[in-house]
Every structure is written in C-alpha cells, then in structure tokens.
Length: 77
Image (tube, rainbow, N blue to C red; front, side, top):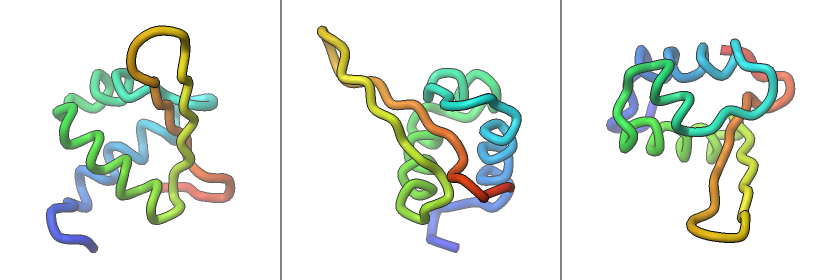
C-alpha cells in the first residue's frame, strides 16, 4: 500500500462507492464517510491511478469542472 494510504479509510470510501448506483460526486462521498475533502480527494486520485475507480468530469458552463466517481467495472471492495 502507498505511503499515507490507510486501509481502513480506503475501505470506507470503497464501501460508499459500492452502495451507490452510478457515479457519486466528491461532496457526497465526504458527507457519507465524514472524511475531510483533502483526504477523499487524495484517495480518489490514488484509486483512479490503480484502476479501481472510474472518474467522470462535467465541465459545465461556469466555474471549475465537477468530478464524479464510481467503482470500475468488475471491482468490488
């Protein structure tokens, strides 16, 4: 496991994604897990790099793009 990645925290995030139908926005993961925004963001980046999670980006018309995440096909926590 990568330095700074806690298996228990990872499991909480993966469980949140497993319970969802489709993509979940970062804010919903933060609210569901009670983990800080910075930590959830870091874990999501790690999970995307590992191929465990897929990211969908919505660029919208104004402001920063919004990202949503789901478990990669065939991946279960």
